[in-house]
Length: 242
Length: 227
Image (cartoon, rainbow over all chains, first blue to last red; front, side):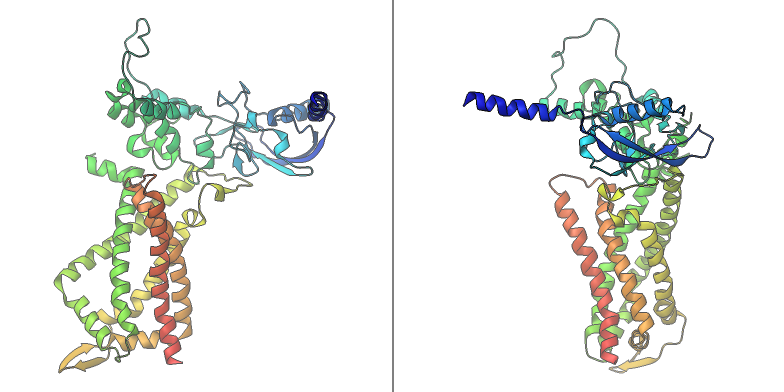
């Protein structure tokens, strides 16, 4: 009985590790030489392994493009662990694609044989295109620099439990602090608004006692009453254009 | 800049104006729909004409009507400004987007629905409001007192199919406009709470459909009665 079970799981894992399994996909990728050029969607055909991550699939495409002497597709990526917020692709009409995860954590098994996959950069005036799929998201940094911080005296770190904070409040503040500034909220919003990002920047600090003292100033500097509408108008209004 | 001007120039302040004028217009719709149900009475229009007389002569109603005209204008102007800002925020759109996964059709087309309603309001006010105030309306006499017979004008208009079609289409647009607008008005004013959100959503659907259906029933009812 035990052996049977072991053999079953062994067979299952071998099947799962079948790296030879390939899937045909048609990619439509936004290619744009630089910020000032006119871009267009270019078609590519790839054979991919379902166990690849989305970025690994693009790596493989770039390898073949380079072998052919063509310009590889430029896209942002860094940690590939879903925590840095670098990857940002608009895949098949949704930010980060069909699953609720970052692009680097999206795997090719969520696509089916013969599917057409449209890959575009974030579209917002506040996120100008640098090249192909890479956009300049430094507007987020400027918002944080303008007021997304609190004043803390330097010195050795204070004891973690010195200031009592209820668990519910700590969890809520952490939820906001978990924003990795990937920009998907701006990409998804029909008004290209940074409302969710700005909201997270404010509440991650303002919910806690350390941030409460500067709550009003933080909100104002972050965009305050103007953070709700167009992201672009917020930057204009706050003088935060790059 | 004073804080009032600063608020009204911020996008949040503008949304606040949209919400306050929008919700005020919702209360007006309730009164307007309620009063107009007099059209369903088969008394040759006496109740309706007495009601219109009251609405055009009561000083309080007159005062509120000026707030109403201002609200419609503010709502339209601010909608134009906000739509322009939002358009500018994404000058190049997506080649392939599936926005329905995080927003409703009505919410994305409030501007389009609003333009239909604005055109409707212009035709509607020219047909009834202008005739009542500045045009020549036949008179009717009840208990020795003379009344402007607006009922006759209503029957004249609604017995023609182009009016019925225009009104029915406009009321369908209004239903979508209200389903999103009523709920969003509260959202802008801070009315967002996990416990009450479902109630607010259901209320918004009910409000949009009931009010619009009631209004659409009037021209259809008159058309059927006169044919």
